[in-house]
Image (cartoon, rainbow over the protein chains, first blue to last red):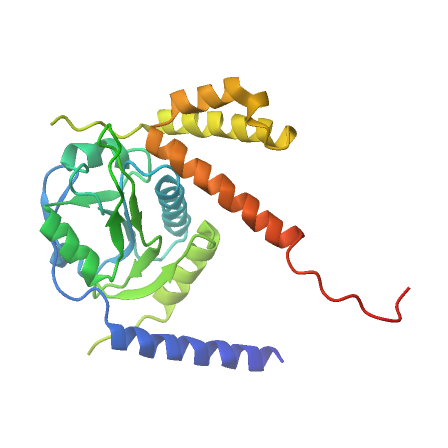
Length: 192
Length: 82
């Protein structure tokens, strides 16, 4: 019975790979600024694994929770000898307010290697659409404050920059780390 | 136009704490807001207005979800069972 279960799991993973290859999400370059004001493009991360979250610094609860979880998953993976490093990444969906200085203030509460990225509205929109991220700015109140409704997912990026997996709110830090490890062990580039 | 800074981690935690105290009071008093006025004011003072609205909606949603889970669908009573 265990053999059958493993076979089913393998078929599931193969189906998922085929879907991901068809989607090939994350193609195209991005040109963004990190929290130190340095220009970063996708090429800078080629060859590295990444865990990426889209959010905004004025987010009431979900973004800090997901970034906390992402940070803990990266820390768990760091403790395992022999695994390549994972780059934690945060891209804003609120470029109007989340400038370089705002990113700097925000990311320091999370993993020390967390890289925050921002840019012009066009650059940010291009990065979001490469990963099919939904983002919608809500109505402004009298203080000019607003929330941004957005896809809440942590994306696993393979060394080729393409999206290999995603983790929703219900996945724990431990589950994410386990999944990333499995992907690392069985990694083959999605596109030839 | 000056941009308002986003709340820091300390400010976020203070807001969440005030929210939780208010919600616990509401839980204890069957959602009678008049019994929790002081905690409501504390919640509103520690959180941006947008967040207060967001958390109010979250509470309504959680209540609705709980209602579905507890009252929701009653399976038809099986006949012949005591």
